[in-house]
Structures are given as structure tokens and as C-alpha cells.
Length: 370
Image 1: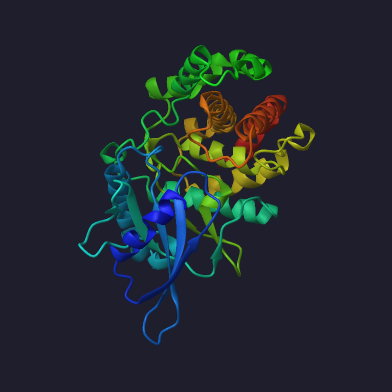
Image 2: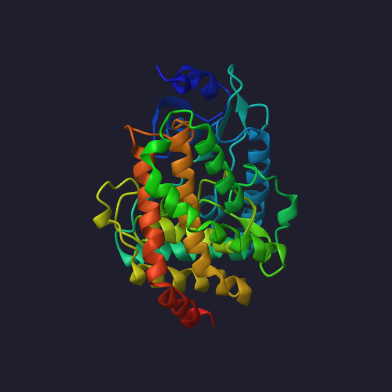
């Protein structure tokens, strides 16, 4: 039995679901947290569902800070959505408190569990099945930026220190190479050479931040397509989810991570790299939708750096996969040997493709900036 299952009943008992719990099953395909869908029967009313998650202690060493950020941001979003005449029960996550009024429960192993009401009539997509769906996610993440543009970023905890610090990610890779705990460095010579050739790129965005060219904002920091719930009927983005990494950051990183994940048609761990190609039309579809969603909240400098966001988030993610592979696959969940190395290789192939289309990427931003 997996560790999470051992403590599942204990966690279920910590929350008042306003009805009888009739089942709890594994849910979703996330790499980090343990996620369950809880089915309840509130009297004679229709079944109500909740999402119950055990927060990864490997990824998040201070769950109280994670939850403080989430409560602050979702409460702020709820107020803003309500004032705009929207539906906060569908358009933002809301934290379901424990029986003693806390935002999370700590089990007998010291691990944190939290609950969100399930947002019905939505789905989470792993790939951009149509350009329209990819655009819908862009509008959703753009709105997320716009709605939080006045939230004081400096009041948020940095839940994963230096998370999108590409300079630090490079340093961690070098440390993993030097230590070589699994004896795998001999397998990754081409990948290490690829990174070495782009060491200077790792400072581009951070230097712009240090020089005051790019502002610090409240950012999601994991803007994959599957972190937007889509309305099953309209196909529009309803709610941005997976808020564990909401913290101070750069808007170009949020944009870039979406491009990394969605502007191609391959699996993240595709072994046949001939199938991994940067899709410029999808990049354009997303760029237009994201810029529209932000509603003028971005500065001209942020717009200038959007292509860099795409390239750097893809490069950084490849570096992270490579580092985890060298260290023994302890951060990202894997289902087979070598999966993190395959993930790394797909990211680096996308970086190379972006470099070959750099002028086109900049021209597309210019087309929609006004």
C-alpha cells in the first residue's frame, strides 16, 4: 500500500464534507502531489465531489507557507470575481477548511492534506487538442495575471526558493554532474554540451529583473495547459488550478511555461525526437490570447521579453529534468527508467527549434502588443 493510502482515512476524517463520504479514489496525472477525488452523499441531495491532496514534502518543505499563499490569492480572486459579477465557485479554487477551521490537516507522518470543492462540468487537458483550446488556456492565464496585477507580490512566500532562478538551476546541474551519485554522467554528454553552449542565456531574464526592466509580479509558475480547467460545453478556460507555486515571479515565465508545454504536439517524454517540434502557429494562437487576457496589464518590456520567456522556461525545464535524472529521479514521478532523460531531451529539442524561429517569434508579439 502506498504511503498516502495509509493515511487517507485519517485525512478524510479531518474534514467536514457536509455529507457521508462514499468513496475516495486516485485522481489526475500530476507528477508531484498525491491527489484523490472524494465522493460524498449529502442527504438526499445529489452526490458532491471534492479534491483531496497530500502535498509533496519533497517539493514543498513548508506547507503552511504554500497554503497561506493559496488562501490569500484565492480570497483576493473571489472578491474580484464577485465584484465583476462572475461566479467565484467556478472561476477560482476555494480552500475547504478542516473541522477545526484550518486550511490544511497534518497527518501522523507530518504530511499536509488540503481539500478543494470539485468544479463540475470541467475537464483538464494534457495536450492542446485544438488551437481554440490552447487559446482558451492563454486567455485564462492572461486573466490570472490581470486579476492579480495589484496584489502585493512581496507579501507572498517563496514556496520553492529560487524556483525559476535559471542561474541557480544551472548551478544545481553542475553540482549534480560533479557528484554523479548514480554514475549517469557518462550517459548525458550531448545534453550537457547543449546546456554549456547556452550558459549565458540563463541570466537574461534575471539580469533584466535586477536592472528594473522587468517588474516582479504574482505569478503561477507552472502554467501548463492541464492547470486550466476547461468548460466541457463551451471549451473556455474556467479556472486556473494547481496554485502551489504561486509566488513572486516574472510574467514572461508564466507565458513561457505555457508555450513550452503546449506549442508542440508531442508527449513530454517522447523518445522519438523527430516528433518533437516547436509549433509556430500554436505559439501565435497562444500569444494573441494571452496578451488579450492580460488586458493591458503587461509593460512594453514584458512584451519584448515574451519570446525569452518561452525559450528560458523550456531550457530551464530541460535542465531540471536532467538534474533529477542525474540525482536518481527523486523529484519528478517516473513510470519507467530513463523517463526524466527523455523529458530533458524533448525540452532541448524545442529550445533548438525556437532558436531557429526567433525572428518569427518576436514578430508575432509585435503583431499583438497593441
